[in-house]
Length: 192
Image 1 (cartoon, rainbow, N blue to C red):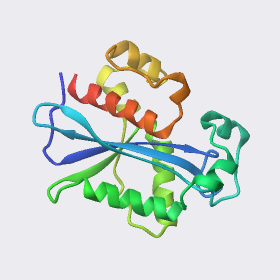
Image 2 (cartoon, rainbow, N blue to C red):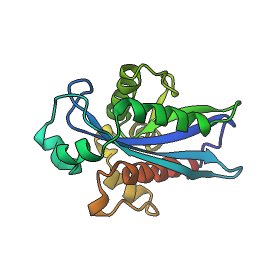
Image 3 (cartoon, rainbow, N blue to C red):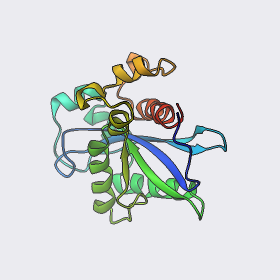
Image 4 (tube, rainbow, N blue to C red):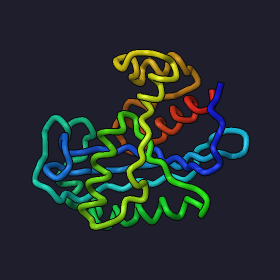
């Protein structure tokens, strides 16, 4: 049974890739997101965003860089400045939220993505359009299905919600592809 909708919340499923475990020492190297809103009967995916970000900090963990495959050279040549990306992200979120609506940050293991996004907004001297609110789909899955945390991985989600389709292997750890999958996870958790 689904949750329905409160008439005010617009969800923003955000995923990012980083050069290491913590912001400030390491870099957010890419960020992608998907708007999820209520269409009157169900939650649906909306617009998307994706940015690759030029490095601002010195930290590059080889293991983290191997996960997403974006090289320092590629990011320095093609990434946008971090402050510019955060301003564009804030503007994008605000443009997708009506006067009576509020944005809600959603992550799959939200603490990781949230700490980077919140840090980067503060570092850029910008107001965080999400305020201090975030929803973790792993915790939502845990509570809805009364399972243990260790069972909240994406493989278990695919078992419980067989209509979900994970990104192709070559697209894993692409921030937009992961955010799109995360949006589908959120929709399944809210509507099924």
